Image (cartoon, rainbow, N blue to C red; front, top):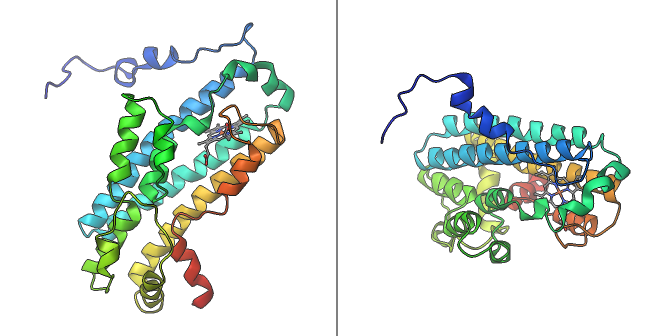
Length: 265
Ligand code: HEM
């Protein structure tokens, strides 16, 4: 591959001119708060890109039987998630009226259409072909989602790793159709209970996955609270019922088995 041999500067390496040209408010004036709204969403998309980069690495490290490195990378993922949650504080400085000053300019645009967020969901096991159908045929987003739809999830990579560690993971889980969502399974729960009781290293790994799950749930909770305080129970610009729809997504953990077993330990 050809390498860029020109001496790099801060601006040329980070593409600062291009980056700073990407914030284009649509409101007339423009309304002061629209800049914050654009920048915060763009920053989220960059962090989503980094999260996918790191989560793909965690799956590879499970595949390569490198649990310590996987745990180290998971710690980075969790730290990023904390930043994602904290960023909502900034958006909450925007009052409902300040948001209304440019909301109509968003038309049907909504975080609902973030393909990278759906890619993260797919990678973690929440697969849905309906989510793919929302993106135009031939688009980058649809191709990326389509690829991830068929690929094994992080949980699949973890179960394969446990099988190689000597745990008797039933074949049905190891050869499952990976385009289906992850569901709770009693036989996996028995294995996890054994790990928590007798295998402190892998139990630690399980705890980091619980942290990851809790981090996503925390983001969902803080996002819905921000939505409620900004638009109340109004419909979303993406066409859903708004906060009512978002509240329903709160009760869905990413790794259900890791939650199911806790009352049995
Ligand atoms: C004033 C700020 C915001 C409001 C009022 C808002 C509102 C909403 C609403 C009502 C929905 C439901 C779907 C729909 O539009 O019908 C939604 C979904 C979503 N929003 Fe926001 N949002 C805001 C900021 C953000 C930010 C900063 C992000 C970061 C990327 C974000 C990401 C998402 C995602 C990923 C979904 C889909 C969630 C899911 O389907 O589980 N939102 N938002």
